[in-house]
Amino acid sequence: MRLLIMGPPGAGKGTQACHVATHYGLVAVSSGDLFRKHIKAQDTLGKKVSALIAAGEFVPDVVTTSMVFRRLLQPDARPGWLLDGYPRTLGQVEALDIAQREIGTKIDAVISLVADPTALVGRMLKRAELEGRADDNAETISKRIEVYYAETEPVMSVYADRGLVVEVDALGEVDEVTRRLTAALDAKLTAS
Image: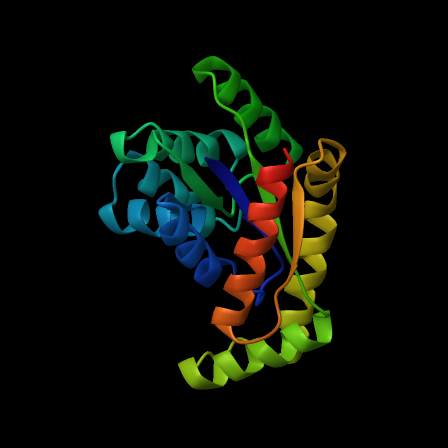
């Protein structure tokens, strides 16, 4: 099984990705975690990403795609995976499509965690307080959520047109959201 999980900041993507991957016996692959791993290792990709970030530039699709695909080609990911944080652009969608055609696989479903932006701001402010994140304030969090919707709308439209999107309410206790998510996903996969 190959899944994507998408949702705005604060929707619980990372948490739900781990729960869903465990439930279905998949490898959870987070592009953010991969970036941090390569930066910490200071390997070729890590040095390139560090330099781009230090210069205030975006990491190009080709660098992100290279990093994600290297991970997906590892033996533990061959039976199935859940991608968190990729694809984020139409170029990345196209790259993923091409790669999957090459290896004879396809995306089975795209989980879309949905929540009221005001509730997400409140959730993230609470998390910022607990984790001592002084840079997370209502204004910056709202902006991040706004940017997410603007940037991912075209990506979600592609997957919605393909009939792959499974929308799940992201608000509630973690276990409650996980139950809703796996029930909706099971229903989608059974119907496909």
